[in-house]
Length: 426
Image 1 (cartoon, rainbow, N blue to C red):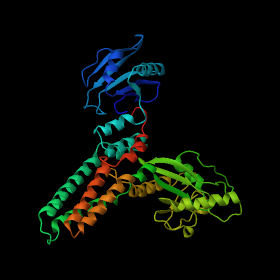
Image 2 (image 1 turned 135 degrees about the vertical axis):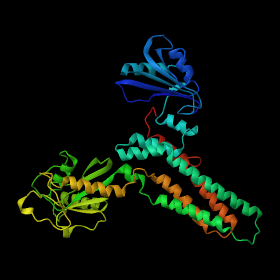
Image 3 (image 1 turned 30 degrees about the horizontal axis):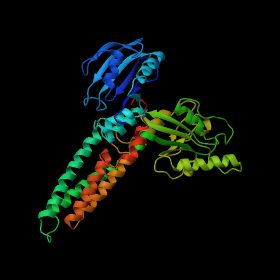
Image 4 (image 1 turned 90 degrees about the vertical axis):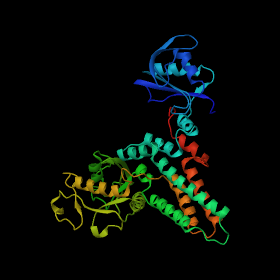
């Protein structure tokens, strides 16, 4: 299938001002000539009439761009047709391409997969592209862009080169050192130092917290104002508000972007003892959601607040005359007047910034962290090795982990899942 020439709409679904149709593979330029006649010089754009290869009917007047192997996004011959973005125009051009022998529609992510297989990007950059497409907040966009632009790849190359140098020293020791000599202390120190550096990277907040969002849960007894507070923070009526205790039976989630940070705000059922079977189920679920929260906002008696590492005590309904006394350590908030809501949002953002990767800090996903952990463990063993041959084997294991990390080896099991996240034209 890698020898096939593929095509797909790579821009958004029509109608649009412009739609981009991408063709990649050995027959892409010949296909372009069948539709557009002569092609422009490589990496140049030119306006051409697109005509059906069988009937010569005019399909559109489009901008044509040509890229020659290997200097293209996929590492193959590539042609792009920038057409008018009407549905009929796009459908007619795609149908014309489909009528040509040797061409077929692309599968999801196939353009990016070919870029990976042809060495234009490594696996970490492909993961960054997938994250960039799915990014919904500014923080997610910045983190994905750093990965897609090769920041992690460059760091891995540095680690890989250092491991190769350590491996060369270890192999030389096996070949030339006397059997009764101890392992070179500098070699042991080099392995241990690199392992410690990798552990530092593994201690960073994982990128999943940035992708999934910081889970902020509002909890407390019934009629404490939880649903009203959620609506005030979300800026929309997402939760039903009444004076009837137990109105909220199940938790409600609202994804938000606060100061460019991904937040998942959750309203929960009031925590109390109840004989109502349905409400009891909601209370049990609320207790589990609260326990799993990254940030827990507690509306209720401060002395009854559950233990939590990131607990924010809120004195709700502060606009009411009978709620004037502010408990120590609580933040006064009114969902009616919005008193204290900005301060509460600032508090949430401050805690979220501690839990999320920094704006200019590369973080690892689970797959990357797993491979880096394998490399760190191997280097830690190498740093304690008593024999050169054992040290050399552990360094080789670390080198293999780096190869899996970039997709040079052993990554087949993740490729289908990764590239399946892309759209047809990516």
